[in-house]
Length: 448
Image 1 (cartoon, one colour):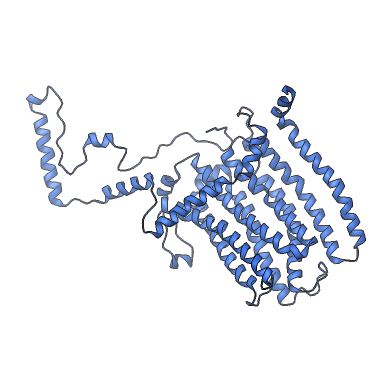
Image 2 (tube, rainbow, N blue to C red):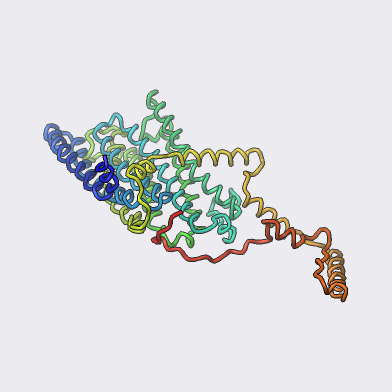
């Protein structure tokens, strides 16, 4: 029993060799089977394409697995690495779904829609990753309040007013990202129903099929989510600079946008007849050619994406040998635990409900800012200034008389002024002066 505990306690030393060994065994079993299938169906163009896609898929697996395992081994910042690991699964899930779609074209709709749902999940996790990074270093709402007004880009600025920097800006950016996470599963369910009814017709731009409308709606939701993510990044890029966000942002953005617009471009190309001479997919119908070409391209692109993710979301900044040892199963479980997503959705649902009712969600920060704005926006009239000046002058004169020099007397202020005692007893201030605080590097060990 004690030996087993010792082995479990040293799981960091054997977990990666174990998983890579299992991968090699799987490869030694799967590769000969793929070769046998290829030989038996050598004349089938789809089998050739599937075989090439399998080679590309197996090339992307070890790179992604190595990065994920190293993050699990050096799991020193759970609030950041939980989201990083979920993002790192993206190339593997994309490549696997595309490879299976090539082999089982009739089930392509299920593999592709799962891939799109995970895409929305990745965008959400990237937003949470940025928010958690900032919350460890500053008050996000207060930092946004000090920023210049972030304007919408053309032509959105003609449709929507600019969001007030601070609480409103943060809430609208989070809602913009989270709506895609909610809408994509709904679109997936509708797609399944339409496929069962025979009206889905993937890849057909005739506006008689459900796919034409669903892809437009999904595109609008995706663009809005990425726009809100870009807007938030633009507002906080100085605070995010220590973690080099540009490479991370490009990895997520390019995979999401490139894969989506690539599918649209392929569908348009096939619909206008430019893909008639293709020799990757034996079928010549629009649906098979569109999905097949998209899937083989994704298999190749995910090899590059897995390498890019390895460097963009490196585990090196999280190496801290002095950090507390995490139990073996803890890091794996937190990677799979999605309760943070559900709680975030519930919180944002309350925010939306409050706005619909015409109120504002409770927030001590927001109440403080409202009070501060109210106090600073009050402009006394000239008579008020004169009366207050006379009252303060008489109070000073009374205080300096010999009878009052033996003990301090409180300064008499007008009734409507804020007393110093009330100001000291209250947590409210006219403004919050930012404290500089120590500069924290991204690689510095930090436990909360």
